Image (tube, rainbow, N blue to C red; front, side):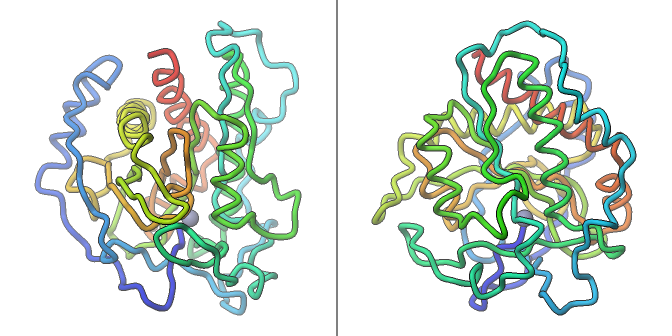
Length: 308
Ligand code: ZN
């Protein structure tokens, strides 16, 4: 992710006391959901902000050319099998976090937008691995894989951006795209930029906010259901553990400071698939085979949510 602004604190690492046990149990339970011992972890305070920005002038400037390509071809098949059609009539919006062009448009993405509770940057550059694989490339790759999987199930899938615009969209527009599509589910794809040793994924759920243009009260419950299903299926398919630095081992965090969630009127969550700045997580995030698993896990959670 990269929601860092000048007023935010660095992350506060919190080691899970029971992460490995939770993961082991979850992995043993078919379908993961029922056995997934989830409880709401309220982390809405600014202390959970993650410092992840990659400045335009940093040596780690994201470059598309550095994108690992292993396994990428299986996202490009135009002739997906017919599938079950179980999601016919359902609309899924996938929101690939950031935009590969953002770092060339710092003035545009630093513009403040209204997120209901306050004002915040339009968008951010996102983070990158130490070898320069950009979060914005990662999010698009996972989004493409998810689109293929979900279309096979009959869903109508829309992306908020596909590197088909110079920068953005801004976070308010990202929310508006899901709202106007009357999406049945929206998932924003990210990877984190935390410290070395901080590992694992977490799903971010909307907290209840009602301020200005933001009113999430109607989406808190269904978004929680969506997020729990995604967390359970992400563990089952990828084998990755929930974050060891946020969420107390549940893989779930609730936040009230993200415009993309605050302005949503349809069920929506974010997922931070791993920590790009940790070498072990980076080895996963840069693997096409692992990204396919990540896409499968997230998609399975969406399918479970939409089928009820
Ligand atoms: Zn991000």
